[in-house]
Image (cartoon, rainbow, N blue to C red; front, top):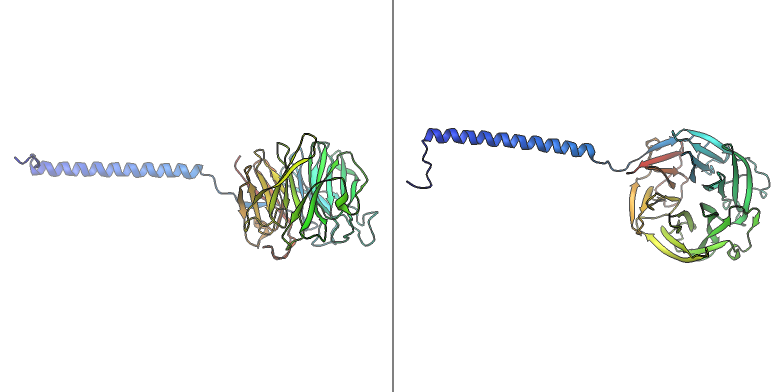
Length: 377
């Protein structure tokens, strides 16, 4: 007998083949069913990519939101200078933990004591102190280039602004604010207005300082702790966004250059180093307002690009979200974002919508909005 031949009768061989074929089909169907179940489980547990969505549409008396700060009760205060339509007074808005918008404070207009021809406060960067008081950058550069900008403390009692206290006057472009270790730090976006390259700076004040008159020229003032040089002349703004990490290092973004610097301090509190920390030429265009999360990731508003960038603790730059010119603002698309605030697992974005040349944002339109991007815990 040929050892390769099957000794069974032909009828038995065919029956066996049919059985084998049925078993193979059963195994195949079982495998497909398992694959479908596994794929279904994977789909149900897969984390969707971050999406920019609408957090809140502000009332029509708000047309240009800017800086934000998070309060202890998880509500947000938004500064609204209303540059797009100055028939509306500058205000502070409160966004409740349930994301309802309400007026927190309306600045008197005309504001007493301003120079001739200037009748209004221009609230920009804002930060809450441990006391609950609010520190506010008042940027009047568009109306008066003679060191007219100021730093204010808004005394808050029983959840309301009781009074405004002048901390310092004599800035050119008072902009971003951070509070750390008993001091308030403020970015001066144009320390020497006509300098080439543009010089900008960070100034520091004790939280109890009041009525400081900064020196003229401003570059000689002792409150300056460090300076920067900006090479991009498309937008004549230097130091802007500002934030501390949990180790006490200071990060400052240069608006026009899209570059972030890291500033370290010695034991005496003086600046030890000031170096470029992060940049992504051709991708990160602007560095506007920024905040960090508990892991020291920085979330930076890239205004020109309608984007939020993530700066990892090692200095690498990633994109959290980016979109083209916003057509439907109620969709939550970013519309010239100027600040990114961390609230739990959410990135809250203030959409300034105040068109600049060479920005994706091409026109101003109501309603003014805040967007939200949810991230992983």
